[in-house]
Length: 101
Image (cartoon, rainbow, N blue to C red; front, top):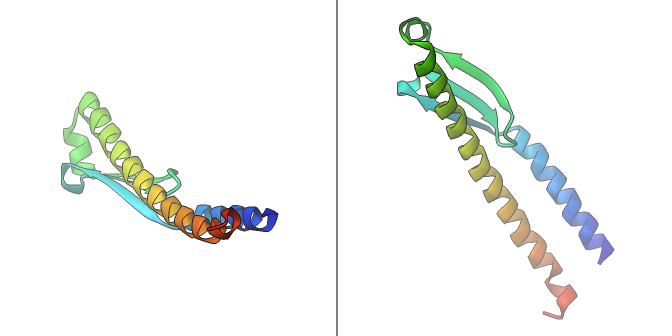
């Protein structure tokens, strides 16, 4: 049983490393603001179109940045959840013998 738990922990660590290599994006205004993050919910870049930046007021820009960040983080959460769900299926499949099934 301990071996199976250790294997599950190792698998979780592998997924976390893989999530660091998956990029997700949040865009608003047709890509004029683009946020890039990892599937581990780490923001890696913020891009704002220069002309759009010059034409926007502070409140509008702040609101759009929040929207773009939240879109990227939502996408990261979805990717992360899908990866964890796959790991759980694999793990439970491997643990099935422990419970007499």
